[in-house]
Length: 395
Image (cartoon, rainbow, N blue to C red):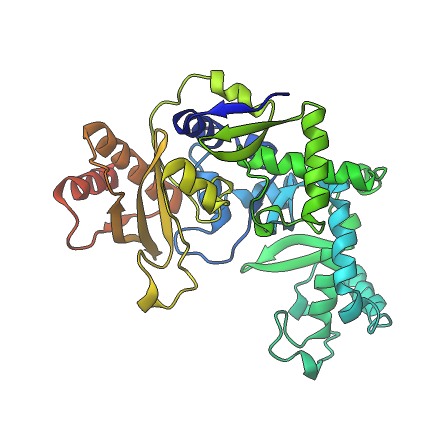
């Protein structure tokens, strides 16, 4: 299949249609495959922000019913900790194998006799957080480690990563663990295993489906597969040969896309709206690609010392039509949404339509947050301030 050549304008329109068309919660997970879970909660957590950008009338924590009552998604590993589709359980077992090897030396071999004790307590008592277990040996050598010195917590994490226990629900953000057999539907839990290659092909296609356009040389952090770059490239070449992936060139930079994704090029442009984008959204996973396509240099500065930040602590990119037009830092405090900084991108001069879209975005985001009040910073230009104030007055 020949390489498809796109202008940046065409690629931007494709990405806009692919990511920010409105749809249901179920459809979003079908398209993205996963949503990265991050515990930081300045204006809803990352997964809430990803979903509010795509799901009409979404509000903070709406995902919890979808996950813990309807069991449509479950907590697992993808690109870091994520929410993934329950029906994909059989296709993700390769992660169980990868992670079990990673925990072998720390937990599964040296503490093999302790694991049945943890599982027995979980079976007898039902869903528990790690601190609710009676069995709590302390490993002094683990002081200061990522999961801490409690053996039971580390055993639970090892079992979680390898698919023997899952997250039943969350309590104050913490995992409530249960046996996988009590949460994952039997037909999925006992489904016939796919081959190693079939699972890798599924994951590679899912990455492309999630991101729209994906550079083959994107960083390992974007892929998050435990295979070599050479093996990944070989599998991608085979998928291109089968017509499932298509090579795409955008003004000198090479991408791949699912062949079906390219059909969006024939769709009409979306109705213009302004979208506040999550910092760990699939749309912005590959910062080099975003810089090339949108001339937008985004760096998440949340872990930088305050004195070294250029934009702010938890800055969200702002998307409008087919461009990234601004960025801002804000925080929800009780029932007040406080804007710290708003920056229009260089060369952006907001017209009346863009300012109206900003008002609509502010109104929608306040509903999403459940905010009752808005606090604006000094120094905001008059037109932008007016748009924020107008949005805050919408019901």
